[in-house]
Length: 69
Figure 1 (cartoon, rainbow, N blue to C red):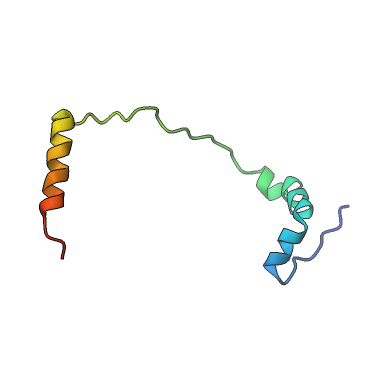
Figure 2: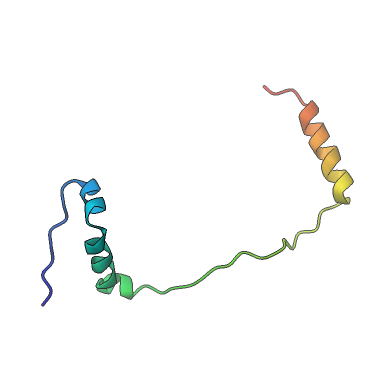
């Protein structure tokens, strides 16, 4: 049976021995039971821009002209 070490009182002490942290993560039954999924963003957004580049420039100009409160 593996011996479990008590967590240090100072959380910054974990930075002094990262190997023990990685070992604890790899041997964790709770973490091993999690379902893993990889989410990847889409290459291009599916939402089309209305009016193209001119509409975006008009909107930017309108925002720049408004007074900030």
